Length: 343
Image (tube, rainbow, N blue to C red):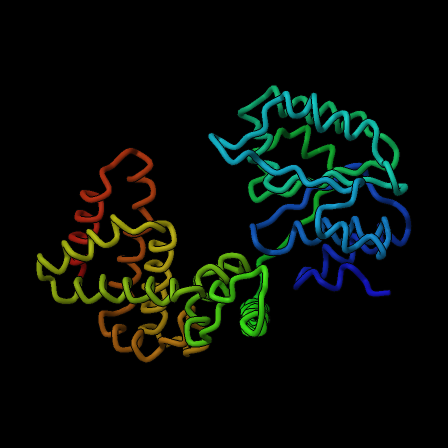
């Protein structure tokens, strides 16, 4: 029989803690898996359930068809938090009567900080009450990118495990595996659309650079050249700053302001200028995030490390301006004008 945890990527510490807990039959009533999205927290929660309930149940658990493993996600609408009625009418009765088939049951909450934020006290307190009265053999697994948004008492009632960002080489392997899977799917009918797979390896380095250690983001950025388009936008901005032509600056500001993935576009620009600053300071190609574009970055490094670093710092201010209800178009016009003035 295989080890269910073998499918969890690049999380050796968390996996070893869980393996030991299973081996010694010392599982707490509640876990809090903390860390970025897309690094394997939910996969690890299901692996834990499989390791405890039994490998024979693995396929049913993976499909969401096992009665003793339930996944409760945030709502799709509004602020997405779960109303207290869901706790009272669905979650608490399930926790009270489970397990139904095995000797253990698992309740998994992806994005627990979204479902039960401290700001929505009624539902958060109802969850806390459920955690304070655990039934033997029933385990809660809360997954969170921002655990500080949960009630401190919820955090204190849970055993906390940290999940780290995935290294670049692991992201590369994941992209390659998905591409191979998509290629195989193209030979016959499949539930997965092969066009959704990251089939062009030339765009992978940019996708990995922007993924911030998240597999879900790397896969999304590798599809349809999304990451390459973001890098091209960064180059457009830098070309406009170099030319200092008002029309070019306005076009670049407009492209940024209207971008559907504004956070990613800003992240890309910040990383791009940090690479330029690093190249200007003499860093080797392997130290660059966009190392596959090292020749272009080194050509742009003539602007100097100080100029690139100051431009990057200005970009970091944009989210605060937008949070203060600044007009997008005006904000980007202003920041590109200030960036072009740095010499």
